[in-house]
Length: 446
RNA sequence: GCCCUGGUAGUAUAGCCCGGCCUAGUAUAGGCGGCUGUCGCCCGCCCGACCCGGGUUCAAAUCCCGGCCAGGGCGCCA
Image 1 (cartoon, rainbow, N blue to C red):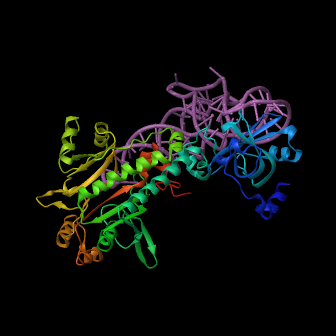
Image 2 (image 1 turned 120 degrees about the vertical axis):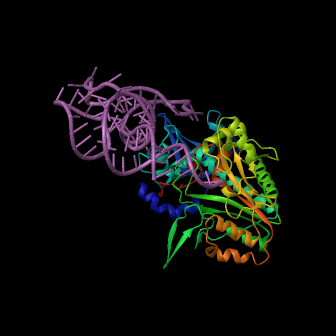
């Protein structure tokens, strides 16, 4: 019987066009006929009456089957339904105090569009929680859960807010190549790819392209994938992640730091306003930060750490343990500025009056680095000198360097890791939670 | 690259330290039956597991070695 319905339903689908989403069903529709489509989330059969929870992209609504007032065929079909079956239901809305949200739908007819194989690999209601590894193996089912829907709606809203912000502030969205011929920054490990008869790499950053493009567009931003072949295995690292990059002509570090703090403030505000329900589901609060954020110099950080009993020699990178301590002293957002030049990438500008200090900065959220950037070098000779100091071959940057002969303006920029930002907005503790299909040191599927 | 921890039914766990009482307990999912207002419904019955290989021992889920897989951390970074 099910098979028959499934073959005829394509033909019949026109008359089964959805009239409402679940969340649009309210007590005012009492007595109206509606058509709903979605998936069975939960089933509670009390014998003479059966309750089905139907889920669609907007939420859930209760379908109630009172067996003695429903025709036999519908009762039979309802008996047959299982979690995660895909169905369309035509029924009458009924105002009902005892139902969730004060409303339910009494089915007049049901079609099964597809069945789900039982038992499912994990509990879609989330009451028997599965490990992250199991969940990622069955990610599509995992994403059905309300908490995950909330996470990805927040991620969507954050991206929406980011684009709004950049548009309002005169930035143009760009897309630079992800298949590249040479390392963009040196240092970080790139994934090699077979590019016909040549070797190519997956881009670890749009850095050089976005700098070049300031000649043409002055203020650019890119939201796109970046790849890092680093063997990190932590809750805050991925091998593929989305980087939010900006570059601005005629600007220095302080100018783009202001862009960053204003952007973060705006994103927090928008997510707070537009994602109330999602934040409630996640039991998370987003605090809208005040601007300007604190600006700590590298020297101040070193000295604060020293007072806390952690010794970091000048010119060394700050180890994770030290960041954790620092995060406790400075909850929420703060910048670290005036980094030693030697621990920053070659394109970060040394200070004119004190070249051992750079105009690079990091933006921290508690102990996690959420963005980094700075004023860039726009003088070709200095850039070549810095490449050599970092043991990079200027010859392999020929196409980048030639652009500096075409009137490269002073410029500055930064990059924010989208996933780390979304961790902050959702309160989740594992970065893989905020990516649909995460890639890390060990996970390549699904 | 290095370090730590773990692997028991579809899922999540108890048991492991101190080997035998484990025919491996519980919850949830799944199957069957019952139940007319559930919202983690309830009740009864059923199905279903010790990661793989080797070793120690009269005896191994439990101790030892190796492998595989997973989680977390370091370095590096967003």
